[in-house]
Length: 493
Image 1: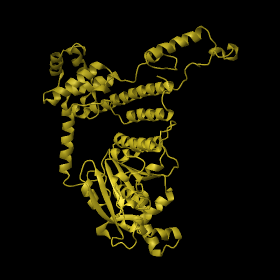
Image 2: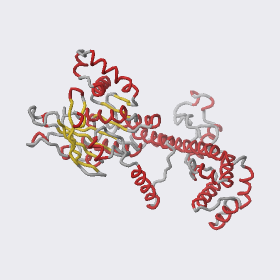
Image 3: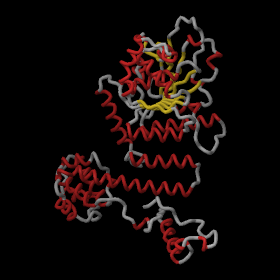
Image 4: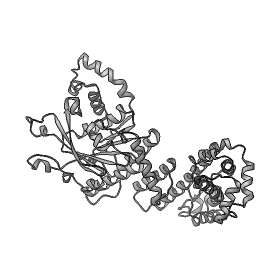
């Protein structure tokens, strides 16, 4: 299907025909094109090319499909190789998908898979005639050049399947554009999701039987146990916090909330430093509050242990420069991305994260901060609270879609300042109660010395894990080193 060429001009007869090029004037040729477009419309597709969409053969390679199946019927090693590459729906011919599924079922039972056994299996299922009879199975074996290349043939089949899904996605995107019933930004977002699903080679299966799910869950539990206490999520750099949470996990939305000037941006940068600089895992920071140079200076200050105010005031000593030079190579080489674009919308963030996931296997997203974001839709929300609620929900969906943890910073209202102990509560989350509902984890940051300079706990900070969907809650005390723009474990002070 071609989606690059326009449909016939809908305004072609809105004026005198002599103003139009000869090829666009009404006549028999135009009627023929109109009928062609009607046929395309009736078939659920649009095609601006010379041939109707239903006449075009989708991308496929029947020879490669036959060679894959022939190799599998000759060698159980070929079956093991192919099953890692192909799914049944990757085959273009339904008969080939049926044969493939029968081979996998027989192989899974530990029985030999050859033309005789597969013919018997298909006969038992009443599907032998659908695939062309037992003779076709023998034909598959005779036509395959060598079973040793089955994995290579499977890659060809898989590539053609991806191209077919791309064509299907293009058709759906074209239909979205012509329907134009929804908000334009939402249509663009859905179109991006269609293409992303193709590039990630995901299936559209929306449900699974519990038995299949349980098998995967048990495999994950076993894998976790075999690591003998090794971190399973993205490490944060804080020993007690990582012991409590086992790191930040794919699909999680983590909210760091505090009153202004409490250090939530610093804590988020600490999480990103641990991810990318300490563990070489790609992360991205979307900063709607600080510029990229300020973020870079804070990262250098924290890593090199050079006072931030020395950098800003130009009073760095020779020792400071030495420390900076020592850490600069590691900081510069870290897969940490910073985006300080102003007025970022939710749609733009999702698009950029998808791109980073594809290119760099993104492992962590930090957004600083939630209340400064814009929804990006042309339809205005009923209230700011509703808008923040929508963005919160979209961040959770982003975490789930890309299978990465997303950290969103959020402001608290003045509730803590009205209490004697000044400690924050989840109910203090500003502008939206849905933030608490969407979040898998809520971390409330509290420092007594922010309210009382002479506090006996000066230099200490509490990470109050007030909500933890998959684990216990707790309060973890860390040290705040504001001059280095960082938090550290108490043992490191």
